Length: 296
Image 1: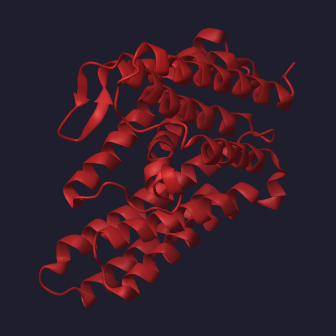
Image 2: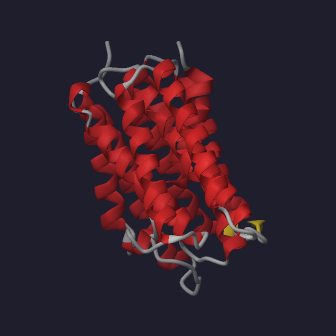
């Protein structure tokens, strides 16, 4: 028998409590340690997590998650176009394109969406080629790749996962595995981190933090395994894998920021940074989960 939704909330609350205790322990175990404070992120972090869970659990015909991901895709696309210093018209057009494609993924069957996506890609490529000027070419190509390929397709994969489960447990599994990895990687890294993971890309990340985040993501997968009718071992392994995929997404976005000489893509979410800063892991992990587990 599948557990009710309150089971997921109880699991989430338990992990939040553990994270809080570990964050408090840092004051005593490493009182002089530097690094970004997790407390500034706590309120918006919890609100965003609850918003995603709620949107995924509302009836599918309401398309609440589609609307939320469309907003996320549009904001992330705007941040990318802005970071690449594209012309004003392009900065307005690409976010709209991304948002429309994400909405289409929520309403259309997969095959129909892919046809629409390919048509949009061809039209965007032609428009970009006609508008390009000299050294704009590289930035135009990067913008099209990110805003018209990477973002809509990755967010579409999350919607396809969501559509496979009327109760919304698969979507919750993906989201909470990535969110757990993000939170505990920072907390355990600040507590135990000694060895840098990728100093040229993201100097603040440590091997210990990455290991801690992945292990807690596996624990989250184990705790949620009954909700998706998997064995404990399968849930733990997939949770671990999704946590690692989230880390790769985070490192990918960090590499982009380093290349563009940015600290954050924007300040839209306050201490969380921008949409790409906050959801880089989820955007990357969603298609990985889809490829690994669906169709079942």
